[in-house]
Image (cartoon, rainbow over all chains, first blue to last red; front, side, top):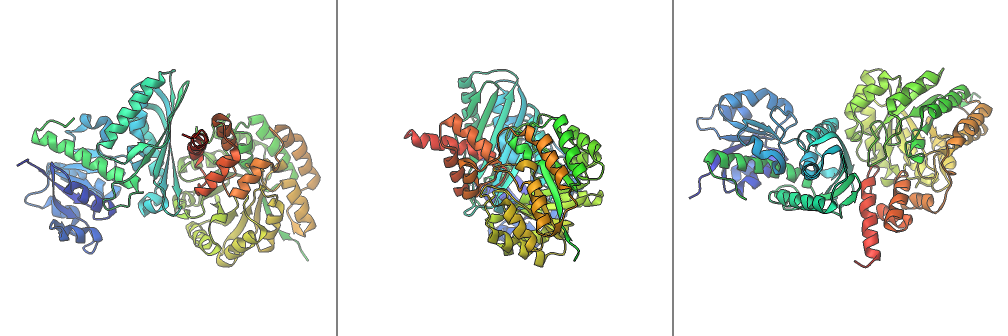
Length: 295
Length: 338
């Protein structure tokens, strides 16, 4: 019987609930508990119904638990994460931070997960970052990128109140992610909310200005390979149109269809966050179990 | 009877930025501001067409950094107020801070008409830092007046001093304007404004309709220099409003001179209603899509009108210039039977 690593979810909102369904499918993760602050939340109810341990005492419950999980997903808020990450570390619990707190290094599984598989705390950047950084990296591993700009268009219905109240955090964090993880010298991010009904699928456009001309065939191969890498954890990640190759410019258009676990399929922006977080946890789990990574 | 005062904001140096593909020079900005200020235009807006931070591959890079243009504009002002535009999601509070430090007194914060709640942090910051706040509900034609009012109320609750009904697509008929402006005038405590585009030839008429319903502020651009077929032409607006019995504080001759001497030489082409700009209004798409659609049409060998109509069918909102490249590719592929 394959061994599994016990994990916990903090935050019983939409993100936490979607994480639960994704963890259920995992070969190396075992959901030990979901905790939140609202005993009547839909997430906690669903978790209880599925037979998981639940509590409305949030972090305290995990910190005081006699047998705490080895890894927790934090789907609360930056404020809550900042208040609790040290206590987690002291108890030897690894954190995968889905909030904007960014205590730990930025991680995009397709790009730099290997570097941080042993980190006690990693941050999942933003949904726009998860969708676009792999493409910037696909370009920057072929030729240096002077400037990367991304336009993320998401369905209005998929943008929660937290995102809406802090939209600058999205643009600024994503832009930094393009630089730090994507490898662009300078990054810029734009987010557009579209209220069309039926809701639109998440779409991202990635523009890169390169330091020098490049070989389009090589560039195309790098992009295709990176799309396949992302598809290992987000099957609905794909090119939406033909990339445009110009002298020192690359334009890439992607679409992100979600898995449809708890979020509707159009909300690829939410799905890619939870899928990336679970992917990160799986790599860490294999590391802990001493099992080599697949592929 | 005393004439009712209507505040005109001239947006030649912001909406007009679209028409010159964001290539305004410092000298041009200085000359235009000097002319408008001397003519008594009370508010002058200066920014990238897509607002602060709009300089990008997606919307077009600015020739001159905004901060430099803002400082140049401020230096020429003797009585006008300097305004800037900010689209949350494109620009940030950091950009607003730069503008305030460069002398901007009016923050105009714009969202798509259904997305008012992404503007809260920017409105708060501007109010807390002593700026007047005017907000824009862009593409107002896309929703019914009662829903528009709900969004306007959010902006008012965040601290807006005035909420604008913005006809970004130049798609509204006078009755559409009346229904929306009157809903806001009745439902809000703060002022109400109207921003027109001339794609259907209705910019001046729609502005009059807005004023008749109780709007307090309206926008214009000199020589109509704005996205699509331009805005309500400021010098025409000043004359028409004077005849209609409104006070604007603007000296007509001086404004006409500013238009002829400072703005007309900048026009890259006449700002007119042609087949493409008319299609922008007819399809109800964001006016600044015009030049992007023309460029994509040429590149992929399709008709710009087909691109614009398809953008309308897909309910594209302001800022989705990148979708034009996809639509043009798809139209080209369809045509070649792929």
